[in-house]
Image (cartoon, rainbow, N blue to C red):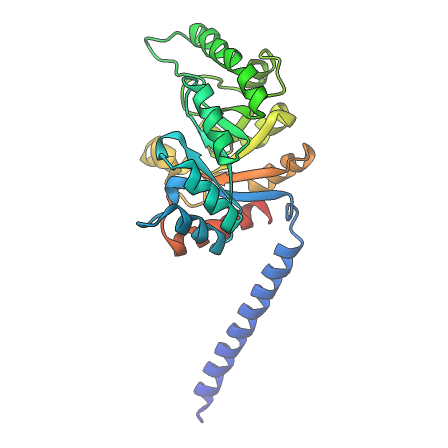
Length: 285
């Protein structure tokens, strides 16, 4: 055997050994992650690719390392099928995404039928035809009207921070929620949505215990500046501008435990497994 072959084999062997050590280290870290056992991973239902039945989609989530799923109202998933899938797979429907403040009672009832515990709300939209102050009053009124039914059904109404030109700071979002004076109203904090104009680690301590759910996505300020506003989302979890260590530190300070749901481009088995692995990495699971 030539000396060059010996060196090549050595490099290959060393590389393989290093990879094995890295995998072992990763496995050890996962077993002792900061949020292991505290956070439960989910995806939005429409992220599950393929022409599959509800049952098979739930089984795929189970196989790829998720604990639950969040269903949009418009996904039109029959509750009886979802309940059967929950019972067989253990994958939980933790909530429903309404995305507005219209039809809250119906969304609450649908969530209850799925066995979930929260409804995601979007507090209207401010534009040239809807003044800021008017939107503030009108959306609060609709949520306030829905609180008694939500309380009766034991379902949380959670307002999400989105790009609707409204609730543009954590201080205002906190005030908006607190003025509704109900333990059944809280915040659905989207980590990636604030990066366009702020830092998620600044929002978390202000909203504090009001945060009952987290959406996980990434955002790149570099892409925003050089390619366009919406292009900022065109980056994988863990590869954008979010300081995930800072986010984890603030989540730990408020003792956050519960659901973290990816809201990114989905796909089949390989893609879902990748998303789960990326969530494990940035959230130290």
